[in-house]
Length: 540
Image 1 (cartoon, rainbow, N blue to C red):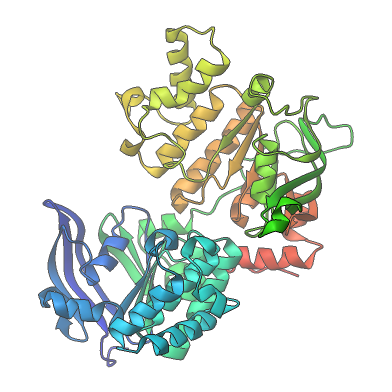
Image 2 (cartoon, rainbow, N blue to C red):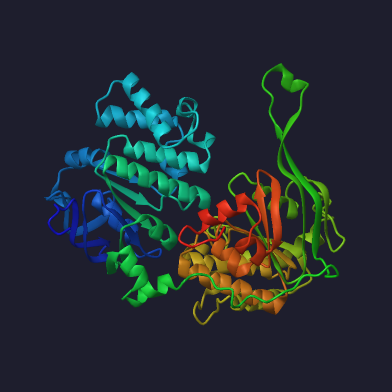
């Protein structure tokens, strides 16, 4: 490889903001047609490094060299960089919904690239845009050409982003967490698609990610960053087998463990905390034209699901996007109307705030995004105490503060580490700390059931392991039950006592976690498990 001309080389690259260094002397090489992964936790500097290559950080101070085919990009003029961006080096961003223009159709956005970069006539650019959408696997590309981003699914939006990035036929593609917002099966599909397109076009790909399973599946070489330093690099096989740096070893050892999970053996006589029989969820569909006045149509998101949950256990729910997982969770939480029978120790949702108040205290929820689920205008003390003030209004202010502090200590946050803990706002905490605050908010009212909606998918692998360990300990000490919705097979293996598999609103398979996750009876379950854990051997 040493004799091959270098495509991209970073020489002693330093990146600073307002005099504060965030990337410290990076040295990295990429070669034509290579697939490399840049790995590290949030704040490690990997995204800043990639954005610096294209000089997309306006307020950043850059030192060193970014050599693109021998030319230093840090010395290029603005117009020259404008030509290089998209034409020679393209980028796929993490969240397509925010990266795509909501006021233009996806076809117009791809066509615009072709007109600006390849100087194609509008009609030719439109035709090529449709072809690119087809190449990236979007069904009915002519119709999707005229769709706006909000009218596409997450996977379709990411494919449209990929089509836009590939429109100018770049030599290097920077893919910044391109699959984080997708279900695991879609993540695998996107990586396989990216690999196929890379082989066809011969472009090089720099994959920026914290998902080590995807790295093993996709990349040839890996570079590991910690706190702005490049601590290790080499072939994927060598680094995974013989990691040298302690930080790399820590990342590789961050797989969730079942060791802290309380054992449980279910029997027919076991007391049930919650039971659902024939649970169905429907949504109304709009009928166009005058027929809409007389015809009522509906879409069924969940068909007759039967399941139960006993105290102190976890029911894991797995399935792809559109499988009905979120509808099931909202029905359990009493947030949407449903049909069939569902009860919590004999109580049912009455669709009345006053009559449901006691049940709301028993059933709480922890959402996927800890930043989006916490009000930025409320302090930690206000966020965690809000439920107590509603459900236990008889408590005095000192009693409320004492309960809030005790619950925060229980989830790993205390005033010794954060002297002004109760008066801080969510933005002052890391992602893992915000998720602990969200947990404390739910736990402070002493619920019996927690609905966990992808509680760790937005977190780094090391933080994910900490949160799962915390959830295991809380289940042991409090005897609390969890309804766990996740696409991560490792999380299910670490947390679930029983597992239920959904596809298109139907329960395909359910049973003890070991049986469903290691000896599944349904072909769909086997395909999901292979997609969820592409790096693992799985016996069919």
